[in-house]
Length: 165
Image (cartoon, rainbow, N blue to C red; front, side):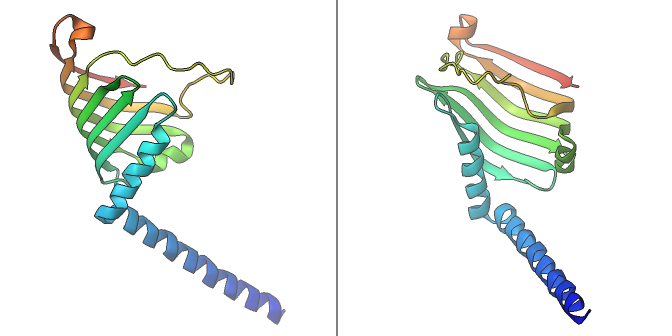
């Protein structure tokens, strides 16, 4: 009986230490410049693939639900084809536990689409290529969209709003 009491006491201490370690890692990754830079590099690596390079910079508000990204650039073999500036996402990180990406607002101060991306290598994996989560975005705000000459014949400027359910 004493063995079990001692075991559960040590198990509680170990659990508390683990929670403190996770909380400390969250603080380092989200509240320090170096941590946010490392997190941006990790996100860039995860979003990149053999035919695509994604560069994310100026990351902030990761766990607060008020995500901010200064710049996102997507490149293929011909160079950059998409750039997003001043991205803001007011979202619920906890909604991901229910396999839903839920956001009150997604905003990009400027979207630049220079051209269509190069066609990538096709995969024989048989996957659907869809998102692993449901989307629920109540407001999308894109006040400044610039389309390059290859897409519109000449540089075109437009704006868009919407939602996704």
